[in-house]
Image (cartoon, rainbow, N blue to C red; front, side, top):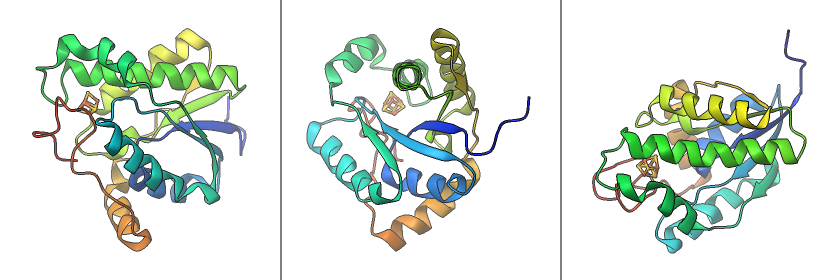
Amino acid sequence: MKRPRNTKLLLHACCAPCASAVLEKLSPRHNLTFLYFNPNIQPAAEYQKRLAEFSKLKTKFKFVAAKYEPAGWLAFTQDLSAEPEGGARCQQCFNYRLDYAARTAAELDFPEFGTTLSISPHKNLEQVNTAGRAAAQKYAVKFIEFDFSSLFRRSIELSKKLGLYRQKYCGCLFARDVCPN
Ligand code: SF4
């Protein structure tokens, strides 16, 4: 069935730079609400910094921010602390974040959800989509399998133009020193 134009879409956003480029691409055709749920980001000061950057964009779209509770994410991934980026810990990380996104979509009556995560060349698209599909099935909402990889350069341009902070690592402390983003 063809997707009706301007169907409500809940889009999980990882950070302001990625959201800026995705917003530019999707806003003409989608009724967007962004969800900021990233308990993987550590330490708390770094989380607050990224959230503050994200909030700079919020006049441009509807925005839901979840409470910052890293303990649940840490418990979910701690056995995988030695994994490299792109390994099993990242799959768990995507599972955790997209499960929350799908549950929020169902609770707030969004028929569809997605994520900006695929924009980063450091992310494995199949891992992201595996997590999204499982969450969609669990909460009976539709996961849109966006591939935003072609927007990465545009996200760098927009970050410069808008003066957005670009983080130097993905998010968790496990990868902080070996995971340039
Ligand atoms: S490297 Fe990034 S995607 Fe992987 S577990 Fe850490 S925060 Fe999550």
